[in-house]
Length: 428
Image 1 (cartoon, rainbow, N blue to C red):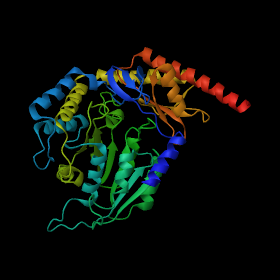
Image 2: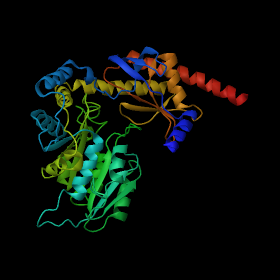
Image 3: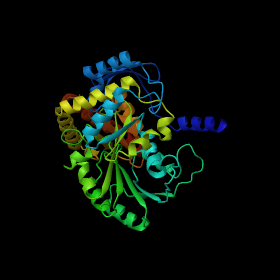
Image 4: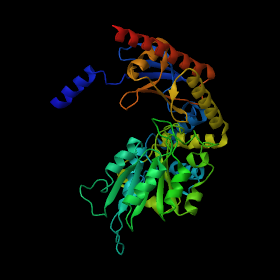
């Protein structure tokens, strides 16, 4: 442990460790927090992913309570044994309807879901008499995909739980961020006759707030019959598309349009943003994929989604279907805040409710976020471990215009102060 201890000591001395806070309560976007010194205060948050405010919705909270009373707090088993209940079936059906794909499998989180997909797609399940798996798999990944995808791809060459596998080779190659021309070029370079082609991308990128060029990706893959396109809709569900159904609706198409040109659409939905819960789901037009997902190591080795979490997600999907005006309000607020930040001279990137605000290189984002918190009572996330320093904010449906104006005014105040201090330092 000496290496770990020495490393962490140096890490902390270098100021690279994040500031952490304990939340004691929440009312809308006002949260009661405790800092590292034990001091408590109320602050305005712009770093929650509760995009539609449904974690505080009365019907969602009541659904979770009712599920506990009927089923208890845990399933205490895996889905394939005794851990499946009717709430799971209902949630899978609601997600399938919401995403326009007929078949869905639930998981505890996105990391497990995408790993299960790699196992199921690349390595199938167990040896079956009379079937020989011979075809290799080529996986293409956007270089800025979420960490859960990257981790799954790093382990895609062998089935989970096995040190050595006997499946045909799995090759993973990157393409430039949202660059369809590069995707087409890389497919032409790396695809071999007989390959099974799988392309995976975030729908909305969690750090940049931009949207994958889905129609163009489908067009490229249409030249590779029976190819598969995976969209991770963690930050797309509930936030883009006229009714919050995600990236296909955003572009005015449906998964069937991909199927019509020979591309198999897969969608990963997560419930930690719009769904007021945790957990994830993989949806497919192919019923045959579901049993393979269900017996993947990440399914058979873990308890199924707990009843209150399942019920909260289930009710959240129903609320979004019943109240699409929530999505419209979120998108309107997103446009307003982006416009106000631009008017104040801030550079934002992306186009969604994930609003990264780039800072001048001389400004330390951790110190910027700390001053926002301590001097202005505004909580935003500092990002300092990527090339361009930034403050990452997220708009949610509960934010008022007054609260968004408060953020912008606070950002201006801190920027002016820190820029003045930086100039004084250079002069000295």
